[in-house]
Structure formats: structure tokens, C-alpha cells
Image (cartoon, rainbow, N blue to C red):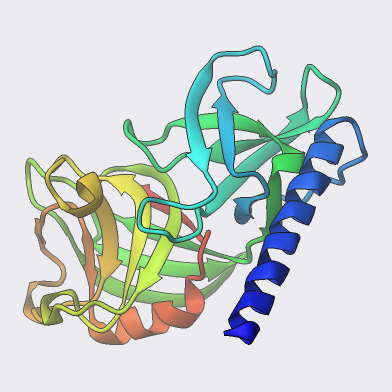
Length: 235
């Protein structure tokens, strides 16, 4: 019990230190830019995302440090510039409806690191690729959304990773920031990239919007697609 109290105290102290550091940076301390695309987490409990890199611009959404499922809120920054207040701001790809919504936040409110790999899904060709720069790490066949439930096009990213407890979803899955047309689907209709117990359906348009891959491909994504990995879904 004493050990648990000690660890809780250390965690609380670290959180307070992070908040204090962020507040100090927001007050005008120097913040160095991180090369984009860059992924990471929030250094503050909640964060207002603005339409422009300007603290007086309209709010797009409020992000919280932890999601409703108690996972860390992962963010992806795809642009950086100096804001109207003279501080650095990052443009985020936001995990919300409508798909491909963007918004700006102060750099000091984020803890970011550059991301190396990216995923490209070609919906018409029914393929998935993982690239590191121009180097191809993986190419495989996929199944995509059926007519009327097409896999959404755009720029997204990996927001969570998990091992499914349903064999239908295969051996591994990543949750993305994209949303399908099904609002009643888990998480409000979040699109996933996951393995499958029906590899015979790969190469077809049969899903509710998710991207199905073979279990071998899903297992490879476990090491190739960390949190924050950018995802481009092309026509």
C-alpha cells in the first residue's frame, strides 16, 4: 500500500510539473518546433482547438488529455506556424466528425515526436502500403467498405491499438481517426484497420467502412503502425 501511495504521489507530481511547464511556455517561454508530421499527447488537462492559429479565433472542439475509454488522447500535427500571439502553433488532424476536420493549438500544449512511417490505402485498388519516406515496407490486399458504406477518403491517423477479443476482427487492430457512415457502430462509427477470419473476402468491397487485412498483415502492423501513424485513404 505504501508503494502504491508513493507511485501515486510521483505521478501526481509529474502531472503538476507538466502542467506548470506548459503554462510557463504559454506565458511566452521559447518552444522549439518539432518536424511535422509529429504525434504525441496533451500536456494540459483540456485544450481548446481553434479554427486559426489565433487564441481569439472560434473554437473547433475541446480535446481532453484522456479519452472516455481512459486511453491517452493521441494527436497528429501536420503543419506548424507562428500564431497571432507570436508563439508557435500546430495544426492538428482531429478525430471527429466530419472527417478531415482540422484545427490549431499552441505548441506548448503538446508533447510531440516526429513519426517515421505512414500508411497509404488505395480504395479502388484494394491495397494497403506502409512506407518510410520513399521506402516501401509493406504492400498487401485489403477489403474496404461496401457501396453505401464506403471507407472514407482523406488524411487520418492511428488513434488506438488493441488485440481484438472477437476472432472476426483478426489478431490485431488499429483504430483510426476516420468515421464511417454508421453512427451506431462502436465509438460512434470509428473506422479500424484489422485482421479478419474471412481472408477469402479480401480484395472486395464488403465491410461497413473498416479496412480488413489478412492476419499476417495485421500482425505486421503491430510493429509498423505505432500510435499517431498518418493514414492516407485515396480513391
